[in-house]
Length: 178
Ligand code: URA
Image 1 (cartoon, rainbow, N blue to C red):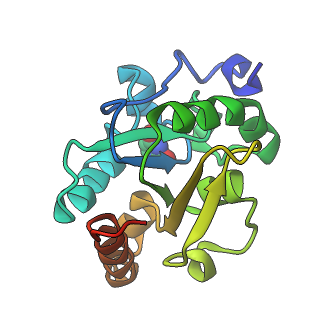
Image 2: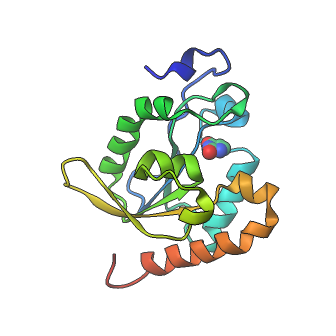
């Protein structure tokens, strides 16, 4: 039912990559052109940057990666809240099935979709939130940070992203998690 699927720019669904028993779920915004071609999220330039960020905190292959919508929006525009709402039950079900220890939300659209937070990412990054299923069965600490595509355009934000990642890794590796 996601309208982007019928907007002509998208060729295929892009759902996830990474192991289904990963301790961390990363949620981005939407697939881009390379993801659309490959059928896998975060495989283009931003994806390589994301991989380097995750490697820097020792998470290499221990992440399940998905997006707020599963089709490439035409012209790579930001998905609307309505489009995100259509895909949201599938994102939530993925989190339920993976049962990660923590969620990393990259960028404002992912933070808005998962946490219903409408402030800008400059105010939200590096702050802990609790993501909950509607039935309260699962609670997962969630940390918003900057989107790798934004970091490539704005290198001055990299220090703040690095501080967020260190915070994330510190909690993940803490013996008495969460
Ligand atoms: N940007 C995203 O948010 N997701 C992708 O899969 C690729 C680029």
